[in-house]
Length: 79
Image (cartoon, rainbow, N blue to C red):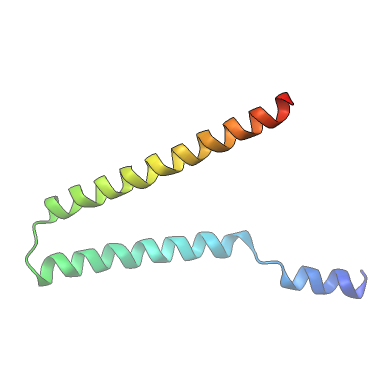
């Protein structure tokens, strides 16, 4: 293997690092929400409903982005 190829291989990040980071952030968020509801005596069901509404909003925006990207790709192919 050439020296340049070896350098490139070292700089490439493992796809599992992103997955691990997302899982750790999710766990931290879960523990943080549990701590907040316990500390400030917030109803957990209400907090979960807000979290569900937020997740739905984010998923809706992601869906709009996918549809827009697909539409643009379809228009480019037709040319």
